[in-house]
Length: 119
Image (cartoon, rainbow, N blue to C red; front, side):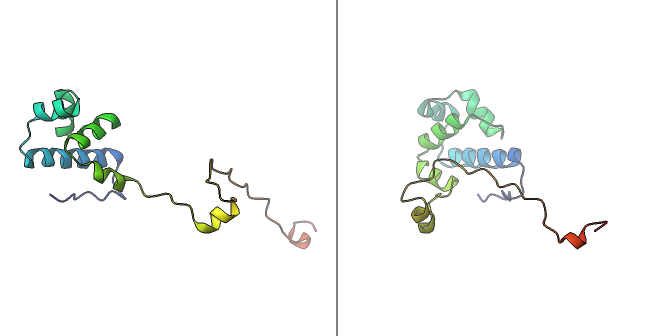
């Protein structure tokens, strides 16, 4: 049961299909029927059929299915900890960043006056 999809280069559809396939394999390895998992997760059986077919389901359904399969500890691994660097904490006066800063626009490239045409 190893994922053969390279998530760094795969399309979102391929990643969704790989994750759905993994959840379906886990369900089958635990000998849980779709009806039983649907009831425990609070989703419809058709949602599990879509999942088994590798089609996308809502994030809410995905999380509910993960909870029903007792896989919530693995949800933390989906996103890295955005921990603030100590240098940034000092620069921000101990507070956490609340919004992203606007990108700086590159100033017009500086040149020597003699590099300009006609100078």
